[in-house]
Image (cartoon, rainbow, N blue to C red):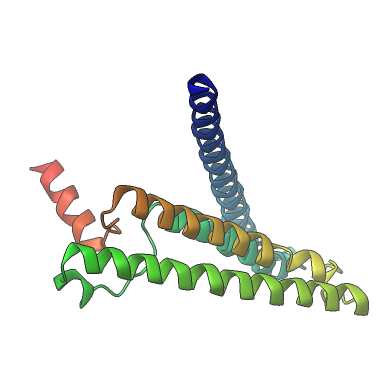
Length: 193
């Protein structure tokens, strides 16, 4: 009987480890996809500058760049949360005891989960509407529902990352502090000294 309960605990821990690894993989894929799209946007802008200087047409480049920027933003949001790059207004909470800071972090991330799920639902409704009315982009004739698929996917990933941060906060029972620009500058200065 004892070995069975140990096996169940082991499987539960192993499952949690597999879930975390899967979340890490998904986060890495979303980051790489977002970075690749950003590279394509940069190349498109360079091409557009070169083409205009040489009087070559650039039909659709701006439209394509705008649509890819939507994908970059929504796929970058989850990774930003994971790396502590999201803006947090902590001017008040930073002066509170650690227990209160942890509580506010959990409440804030819970609000992020709810917000993400609402945006996901609204995004799905938007995609369905564009699919039903069969709307296409003006120049490239891309179906608009494809452009907006990034919204629910990115928001689901953001909700998952918010839940992950809540779980980590509860497990560690401490505040996960986001990296501020000031801290980054101070670290850079220390490295050069």
